[in-house]
Image (cartoon, rainbow, N blue to C red):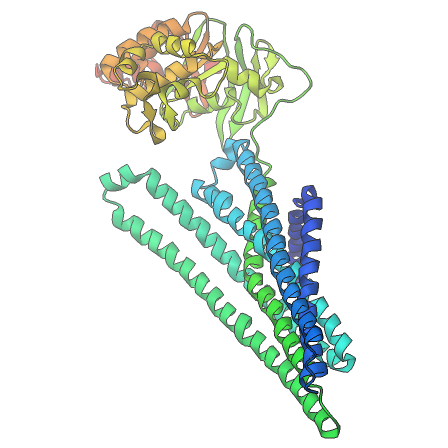
Length: 605
């Protein structure tokens, strides 16, 4: 009973997927209608061809009558029918494929756009290679559905109807005998769909895992080579590749059995039935050779579309499995947090306030616990603490990468959730520890396609963060090509470009995630001078691992296991001789840290 319910659900799901795929065709009704008309014309020409030959054989060849006018007319008619069939088959195939390419182009843009708006909660749990597989391999499989499968199904269906019409026109009894073959064909198609769907689902999953492993290997190639992990990665990749091969071999065996052998067996059964019918008929009278020729010809033509349908069922099942995966991505609900309410507040002063904020990535373990603090306009608040203390989580919530579910975050007295994405991204400038550069040139990476940022402003931003000197030394200066992830630039140069990119927007709030961590000492001194200028008139929230970089902060928050355990200025925290004092001593290699320190929440003091 449970198995039956499961099968019904799978059928409903597959029907729903197919219906959804068909909705993409609604914008091409006129083109589809024209292609359908051309297909009908080509099919009619195909069906009439054997009838013309039947007339020639029975009316002229058998009685040995050869009037040249009638034969010339029949020959001309046969040639015209052949030409019409060839021309309209070409035109309808071209039309169907043009429609298919437009549809798949639209679908790929939809999937890519959806990915751009998914939240980080989704990317935290989804391998990048798996997403690449869905956007490329799976949409390519769906393209085959539109390009060849649907057109083949429609063409073959119309052809089969036309052939049966021709059969009934020639001999109704023989046509009814041929109809006996239909149940065998339908059972064969049903069995193939049932068996192949499971095989192709496994194949797609393994292909996705292959892409994920490949993506991970390419992204971490430096670490793989440094740690001599080539053999391990090769073995892991080989294992997944072998599982993918096994799934493909099951598909090959299934296709070999069901597509050719089984279909050919049904064809032989039909041929035996036709020849037996004419053989029995010949015992009691004269057999019309033209009718025999036409029926054998029709039988060949009847099984040609069946073979095409069976072969296309392979691509159909692949497309249905791929469509399930693509629609699963399109229906993904873990989108990035969006603006709520009808208000459209603006970031004017840049006052940031966290009120009793608690947060968990997995809804089980809190990484932030009752966080409360205020960053006044023009002031700098530094977040310090050991790894895993919750510093980056505070930044993620402020940037609205994750939703605030307990407590609230305010900017200028307005809830963070009421601000539009455009307003937040314009007024909050973020500099990460690992700066990311895009393929393009230096100016493109500073501007990031923001049209309001002119060339003069790009140069001004670079000068402001002292990136201009090294840019001017490049062969093509601001038009110097940037490779993938900026691999041709040093970490310090990438960070300087990241600084310039942020300052090009002149943000009200500056968010720094250990912005000088990957910069050499000489470059750090230049950046520290730039940072001092950048912080003037802006609210700055900075994560720092090196306490020396935040000694002049207006307020330092010390985090431990997701709680603020100390807060104050550099000097006041040193006087307390708490966790901050202990960290400072460790970093500067002075006297042995105070091991008797008891970490307390700031609310306890």
